[in-house]
Length: 277
Length: 277
Image (cartoon, rainbow over all chains, first blue to last red; front, side):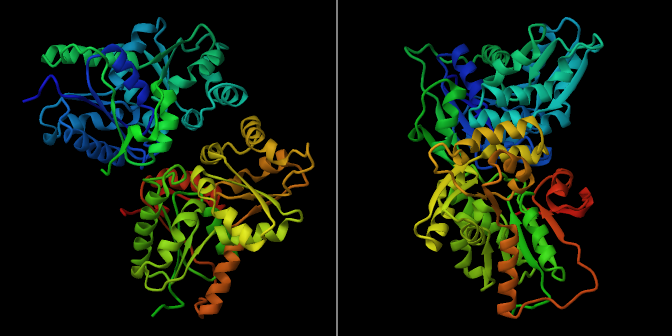
């Protein structure tokens, strides 16, 4: 029997999913959250779907031990390959599982006029084509172009989010997607990796004002709120927003240092508990 | 009883160590090699020493099952933290273990006139200070400056090794190490990560002709040759250079594609066997 006072579990391969946690806390300020970053095995984005799905199941098991009432896969790579195995895993005992790909596709389709939508993400997310399928399910005439941008992950982790290097990297990856030489530029760009929102300013400057940037953090938070409502699992109103419980599989110091800019809150190493999956 | 006809085991977190394997094969063309890249858990460079040492022991066990006569840790991060635990691990049954840090320090001290030596590597390698200790053991008056350059790993993996982006990244990381504003520039730069040799041209162009670049691949191959000689373990002369056995923990296709430029040989996915550690 799930309990409305139980926490919501959120997991990612590392710190990127903290951008989703930030949106969840803003939308659902009375909920408790347990966040798990699998930092010992990141990044997921260059690994095969089989391996990522196995890791995701281990992460889900760890969060089930914390009695979560709902599970958010705050990682595009894992959402793309693990949402089905997780949703049908009997050990998850009917706990709802929400990924970031479907809400991201909703947002993209809502924003695009022309139906020409570009998706950027890790190698694994793009190769898997999950966004393409999710967008085409909603708008069958959409033209979806995917591009893997693995250096964006490294830049975000390094905190190089302004200046010459990220601008040059963004130009190299994106220019052909948004140039309008043949009148066929994409009008919407999906940030299909939870690391990318911290680079949004640089990406927007390269894409120009005619391209709408979409990230799935806000729409995922909306989807979680709707599901809690539907299942009668909303937490009672609290006087203040509970602090999230932060778990990682390695490197509390680095998690706190890099994660602070993704979560938008100061973090110290002692705020992060190390767990073994 | 170790056998001169047995293969040499080489391991790394991923494909970077293939630069060391290339040097080993050039120096020891009659030896057989088994290379293991722990691609399911790469990169090691952002993980804690404790976790990296645990992974290295698992990799060593896997190679011991292949009856290796000598073990090369072709990864600076793992060499820095795991050489002592591995050398004393009873399950390795006296198999010699050679890392890349000590040979790299030999090369740096041999090349530097001023004793002002810069070392670049992953976060974990630099934080651990193993190069600093190894260089100062050889030359106590050396002045060693370490700098973590994690984006170089991502650039090398992405194959962006020429042009504006790597040049700008190299300038950002290295300019202060090699500028001679106060007459105190370093005269030697150690490429303390097996990924970095593929960026040597760009790094050299930023550092200028007064800075010697040192990588440990050749000196490591020399150290392995000397040790085999010393232990009477040199393989018999063969008519042709045996093809290396390539093992990885994930992603044969990506290993072959990215690894080919590190090894300097064409590779196909079917050349790579996937193993579980």
